[in-house]
Image 1 (tube, helix red, strand yellow):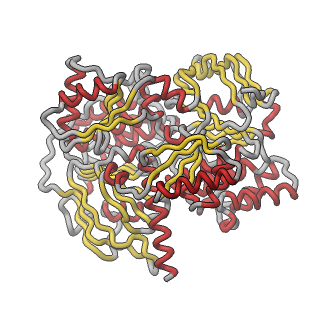
Image 2 (cartoon, rainbow, N blue to C red):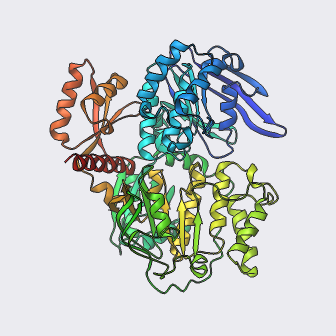
Image 3 (cartoon, rainbow, N blue to C red):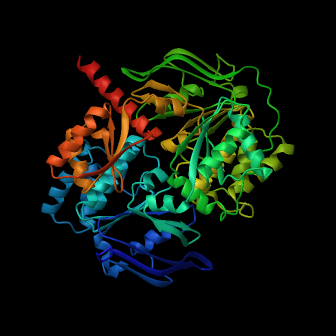
Length: 639
């Protein structure tokens, strides 16, 4: 790049005592970039942000920001930390004014910027609302607004969308793309590889060292691997056949990953591998489709041999005697709080051995529905059964069959790891002969052997999540509720946790999962999408994507940002999204609409360089379903 870098890092090292957090890192960030830093827990990402923000000094090496030492440019840097750091008991306006005072913003600039950014982030209607009363997505938009109020030249974002729903996440990233047009350069750390696709360039950090760097497409091309999606009516047998062939060294597949209704296989030679798989699975019904590798494939293929934890250790299961096929059954349930109906006519069934994903934007009614499904709330109307019980869903006998992992970390920060696990074993009456084995299982799978006496509050967020999952299944529940179980967990740890979740399902546990990470929802055997208290779509992940109307089109322009801006005015805003080097459009009638859109852009002196159809991701499907249903509800209300 011809411009001078905003951030220049040369052979940067950071030690904490004997611990080497960064080991000679070098990279540059250029003006107007969205630059991604991805890596597993403990890779050194947060240390890197602290050094760029001038909060810490390097042990050795050089780092300059805007041509100066990072400490000397702190007033020109905006920083969003992992944890929401604004004041919950102040309003949106009061938080902005407080930050503006700290950053020495004059009154005239404060007024102009506040109006601009609150309108841009759709927060202007809620300016007097307390920050503590905002949804996760609104909190992050407020934090971004406060970071921008001083008009920084560099914006640092450390996992800014953890726990934010998919609609708000997409809006947040579209906002970042718009901000770069104002001269702001963005550096962002994210555990979500679909977000990393939106960065212009990335570095892949592991154990304090850069393993690779480049644009998302460059990283995928350098991997030189292809991805096959396999689907069958007998997924268990297909998965076993693939792994047996690899174990016997009959065929070589670079990676095999099981999802809810498909198996992904990474291969070197597409045609040869497809022939081998068809021969291997000749006795079962099989469909194979060829797809481009994902950034998560890049991440895992680069790092899986570097992580020492390996495959997860098998849980010490005991045989479950389940008396029926149905674990949870909801039949036309409603929940009303006074005049407000939070859940409207929801019906669903979850059988033992199945993983059901309940998805929805913030305020969709998921939490209220889950509280009814697990017996914490009684429906206002409708029928419920849980674990074979239809009457008293709060009985102690039924509670012993349930496991629950809350969205918020529920272990005790001031107890050690071992004390927390011991407490859970006592609560769920785990027999002494199983307790020792299961304690060892948790410690081994979380990589915490030898750390048993460490205070839980001192663990990184990803390790806390893995520990909380282990605690929630110590008693081998028959029905397991997981509320955003892998929030903030890196892709390698997330893959391991989902292998464990599938192991429980294969032993007969019925599992209900909520998640805001739509790639993760692919692991579920069935999904339900909630909008405004209603269940508006149900089905397997592949089925839901296949049923989407229209097409997803990727277009590349000579000026992507300007094209994005004008297309947002021409089309419904949810149909337009900007990525690092392209614009994605959802078109109901692409045969007629695409030509018109290209002509419209040409009239605006914007040249379309290329276009191609892409398969819908689950996030695309979710946003399309939510937005169409929301518009339909508005039309009904207006009528």
